[in-house]
Length: 241
Ligand SMILES: *Cc1c(COP(=O)(O)O)cnc(C)c1O
Image 1 (cartoon, rainbow, N blue to C red):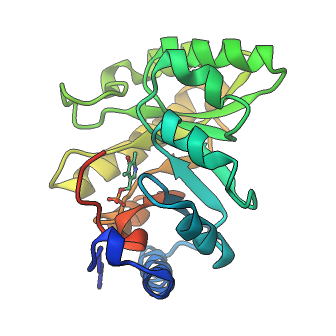
Image 2 (image 1 turned 120 degrees about the vertical axis):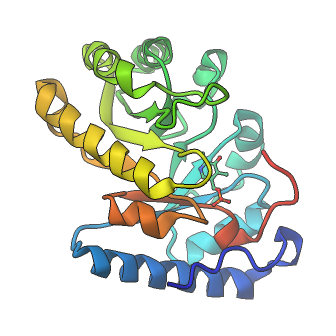
């Protein structure tokens, strides 16, 4: 498995490199699916943080049809220039007071880490007369520093959120602690399957968002349906956001 992640810094990653990078990600994705005996679909999301619009639109021209946004402010400043051929999902830390800015611009919110956030999305969705697809973010490593719902609280939070009329829980999202990712991906897949069985309202959940540039092959092994790829596509970022 060649998980060739981010050879070059983002500034030096041009169109040609993006094209090659995408080929590699697609190749590795197919390989990981084959190994896992999977014949369903894994969506490759391009994570756009810090990436200039021209490169995002170029990735779209190569067939990327799903974009992942982290920061509300950055997203709003770039949104108008997108070629709009892709679906856009919000994946960043969710501040409830900013939901109103994105509610009519994205088709899914991955980073729903509390009932309160789900309620706020519901409220804004009602105002806009729409239903928002959401994923519940699981803090699978139980890390203090991370947002998300702990595995212990997942069933209760999910059951309560499932009652909200204008949100539709499509599945789970996770960012595992560094190292030992396979165990965390396996555990998230278990929780996903348990939840579908135990909570009738969630039996149709179909999205598992896990895996980033460094670990997407492992995530695919454990059933990921959306891999969120930033640096393996656009080059590595010199700062963390
Ligand atoms: C930045 C980010 C990614 C992509 O990270 P890479 O390691 O660059 O692929 C995926 N998911 C979330 C939530 C992110 O913030």
